[in-house]
Length: 195
Length: 195
DNA sequence: GCAAATTAATGATTTATTCAAG
DNA sequence: CTTGAATAAATCATTAATTTGC
Image (cartoon, rainbow over all chains, first blue to last red; front, side):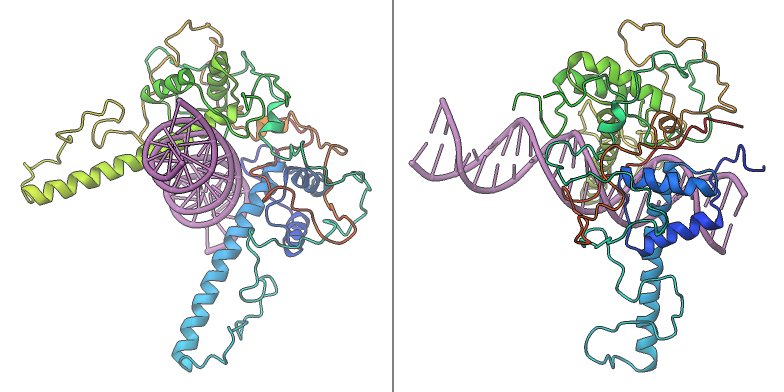
């Protein structure tokens, strides 16, 4: 398959590179808006959707973490095997022979809860000045929260695709692909953010 | 608070009852469309959104499972304490004194992977005949998959709320509530399902 | 009876694990 | 074997039950 009906996103070099940059800059769990903008930017380099960005950060974070864990483990082991517990007092800092330029230095990857800085303008590229007048007036309308957001977009769709009881007459439900979708839901009637 | 600005969904008796019925009928991980319809139905009994239905099934499934595990454990223990390993040859079947009408019988709750039947018309109520002509032509357009679905609804929103680099000028990013949203993403430009 | 204090349920989010395409 | 995609497990947080002292 060329690129058209690929079942899974295949990021381009540029996209990966930019995503990694964002990651290095501290982005871990981008918000809805961030994902939107990131996606918009990366689209210049190839087909991409918001979910891809979302997943990418999920996976990258997780896998960096487990890589980190392994390295820490390895370090401990090696440390013990060679010159047993001669730690120079004060938590060790770095894997001696770790020259990977990708990982954060030992014990230095900030987990989400650690109030990471994220001091960045996400793209060192032409910042299209959009979205300037945004104060932190998050007081009432922090509809950053997806769900809520999505809900105002989708309609109950009473006549789109599959029926609630796709029965086929044999009493069996056709398991289309492998399992059931995912977190597929959303949808609410127009209740807005009443009151 | 009456019901207006509650931060979390508070299901009514009827809603819970109906959800439990659906669960008993075999629903575990409803698809996007199913959630939509379920939500629509349950809305008759009070405010509710798709995500609530989604979460409810997630939680209920998980918690039934762990309840099940505990019961199984309890059974094993009791079994061993009273008449040690005198299993009548052929995996035991049922907890003798288990009269709960809620749980499935021992070892009988079907996990998602077990090609559950789900033979049901979700609501024993007036089945509104909607969505009849639906063949299992899921071959190409199984846009059952949210993500994809959502993506066609939302626009890049280049001027809605927060900026990508909400910098405030101090180089700090305002942590508005407690953490970052959730699985907030979606959004793509109109790429449809162009083959 | 009735609130403040505690505990139990359960709705909502995040993290870990698994599955499968390339 | 890497990694995108999806689900399940663990966790957090808020609301309802329940208890307790008055």
